[in-house]
Image (cartoon, rainbow, N blue to C red; front, side):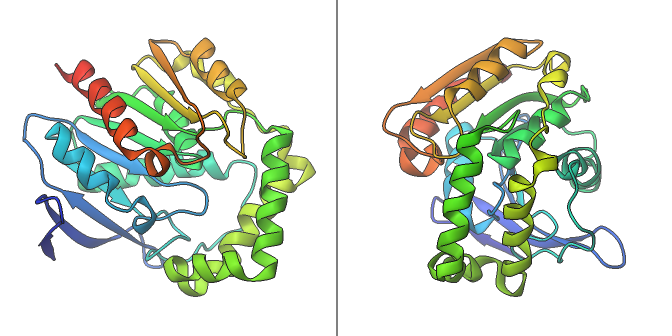
Length: 269
């Protein structure tokens, strides 16, 4: 099904069937044939809709086509069939994302843009050194677990229990909301997840990185940015936004669009 977005960019809404039990909802934005696709990967409680109009606006600014999808268990995609383990982000990066790319963008160049969990997924995928990957933009990505992350999730759990957060998330995830939130909350607060760390794979990432984070992010400190920049195998540009929390692309969309547009133009010429 095709329609035109508010910014005048045509896009397609559809379902990708992964197997007999699993369907992924996705949207594609039109762009120039000689530009790489921008693939947007949402946060740990996010989905396509929670990106709002940011993907459309960035595609319009850069002339790039775009792809944004709901991972399994999120939004309009199928519920998760298995419980989460310490490798849940690796599974999204090394199993689900390659399936999406092979089905929808075979042989096409692309740039990954990941928010929070989506940023970590982008980095894990980047270490596989796909020849079609041209760059990565992370927004509030994590490469290890900090105490501030755990404390932030505890506060979110309290808000969910009180009902306000649950009501808001239910608009996007429907009947999957309870299972999705509890999986996210329980995983990050579990003792066995405290040792989760992906710094070891950063040196294998050779494509240019743009590393965005809000200075006041309640789920992580600038130590995350420092670790990514120091560990990256290629060029990595940090961007710490003052008076900004966990979602720079929503809190300062104009600035985020400018930074990302400059970065994308710099890597594709």
